[in-house]
Length: 256
Ligand code: HEC
Image 1 (cartoon, helix red, strand yellow):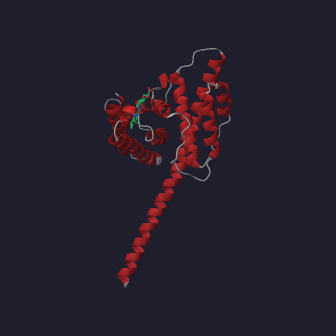
Image 2: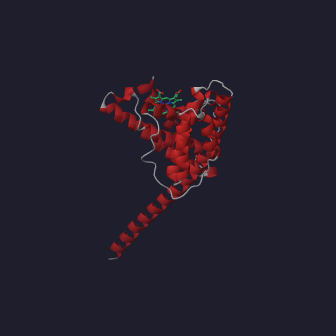
Image 3: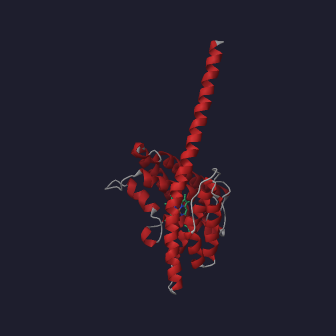
């Protein structure tokens, strides 16, 4: 009898610990989304102010500046969904429509009014699809580009943090935001195989597998980075290396 009781107590404890761990994860994730959302609102406000100003002055607008704005608005819509901030989600989608209609003054006004107000956390599935599929993939990959060509520098930051010679310091706060962005971009990407990856069902599966791998590794990275000064640098470096490998596998097979 005592053994039975002990066994049940033990399994009850395991269940309790698992539930707590999950609750903790959900709580930190919402906070990580909020940090990424605040950073991305700033990026979008700055970018759209520039584009509105250039358009008003009759200057040429670069696709390299427009597409990352679309990608970041897609990120904000997803964060809004994940944080239970439906206003953020809705306003981000309006911004995407205004950009598509080349109404940059309107997009700028909408961006200025963006605010981040987390509510009851929701889910990342059923992501919005405001653009045609090929435009979705481009918009999703564009924030990875270098800052100097209009992106968020994500790809270079990842590579600089894992390189052997004089690497970029792995700062948990910066890595947390990077990881949230990469997780959400990868979740979007999983739905948009390019023509090369649509040739056979196996290719579609492979595309999805790499995207979801990048998403999961990024979620693990965000969870580690959330620990701040106690985050494990070697673990973050390993995850960054694995994420980079996933990007490279997909590019080598389907992009290049
Ligand atoms: C599942 C496949 C896949 C994964 C995973 C993937 N990419 Fe891509 N990426 C592509 C494809 C395909 C393109 C070309 C898109 C196009 O035709 O516009 C691309 C384009 C890009 C571009 C160029 C964008 C432009 O228009 O100049 C960058 C930068 C990029 N990816 C970075 C990354 C990074 C960083 C990761 C990992 C964190 C990553 N990608 C993960 C498939 C993938």
